[in-house]
Image (cartoon, rainbow, N blue to C red; front, side, top):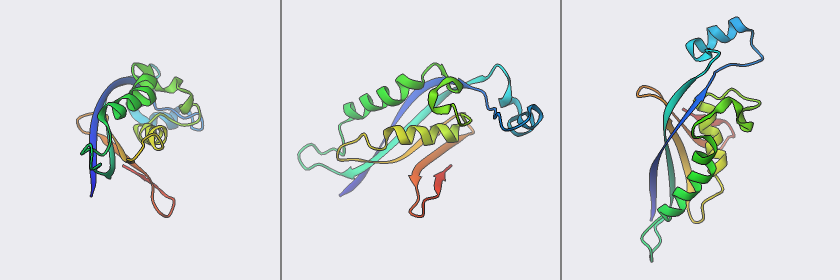
Length: 144
């Protein structure tokens, strides 16, 4: 019996949406107010969904304490109260929330025993959320 478990986590971080491959004018046109040279911050809600067989002995897909410890170590401890632009993983990519979703998915994808990471969902604002569930069968990204 396959089941899904989703868990929410909170973190705060700042970023500036800016690409060195664009001119200053292009960056302003593409990213608008998110290109502010001083950056801006968000109180992100990160939702991690895993799936798997329900263990007959424990009745669980995975241990919540193990899931929490993994997300704390790999995600919250790494990004909470930071400027995402300064994180090594964003040295060659713009720290959009789409890219943050994909990065978090990659950090967590092989960390669970007996459970499979299904998706990472990030709520950036009350109006904007992003999801990433890994690569589709044909190899194209499945974001948003």
